[in-house]
Image (tube, rainbow, N blue to C red):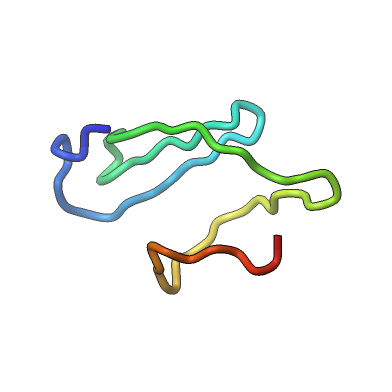
Length: 64
């Protein structure tokens, strides 16, 4: 990751379900990329645009 490329501004994360990759942008500059694992059988990953309403670094899902 290279957050120093754009140290301030709005952050957007673009998730590619087929690639199982997340691309992180700040001020339209790519500052990072990571692998991810989405949706278990019977639990599809929803698509769309989502706003972060709260953050908790130590949160663990109680649903899955």
